Length: 121
Image (cartoon, rainbow, N blue to C red; front, side):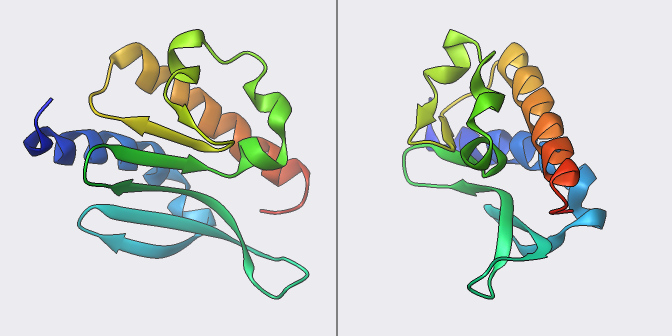
């Protein structure tokens, strides 16, 4: 897929995070970079990261910290979405498939709920 399609991928991934912006802190909202923190402060004084998406040179990254904090959120992850994982909380996309976008949206929602239950939101 050509790099020219990355803005479309980014817009779709950003759309998964935008509904949560009112309850979180938007740290970056630039062309190609959207980043959300919680208002919860970690012991080091820094805010607890929630999620972000960013256009890179060869893919669009989607970071979701709740899956790092609560790895059991990944227990029901499909093999197709798992193939997109890079590290413990990052998913890389060159193109989007509607089923993966839907699954990722559910994962974001479950992650948000877990953060709420833990008192992070």
